[in-house]
Length: 146
Ligand SMILES: [Zn+2]
Image (cartoon, rainbow, N blue to C red; front, side, top):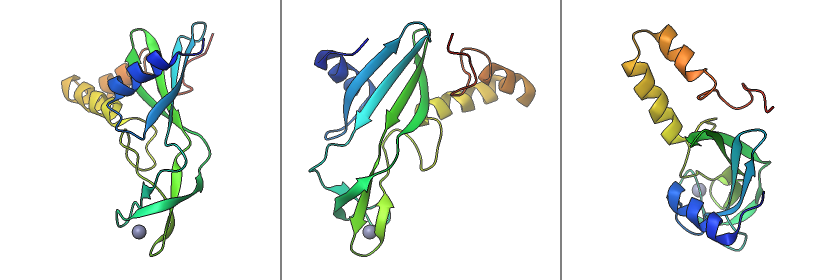
């Protein structure tokens, strides 16, 4: 199921994206019980160097990356994006920072916050690990899509 622009805008607001970051597609996979939200930084907008915050032109976009986010109802929710790389005159080509996750993270900041809360509330690290790897909170790819 492909999303309408109203739904894309709805998800942009839910994620707290600041333009020009925008949701360009929301794919609801009923069989896989998964929502995939595609986020994009449109071409033609300057980006910020991750080293010095200087406004730079876009060199190119990286391959698509995916982040596990908090579930939408009972649906596993994934954010995916091809992150732009800046062309900084001082630092060269750098992948820009994204507002929803830290560099090289596989989970969004909100999902990481949930994981920390679970670890604090759990009686043991073993119990927290069990909760975080159960079907509802399993990381990307840890659960069958059937
Ligand atoms: Zn720089």
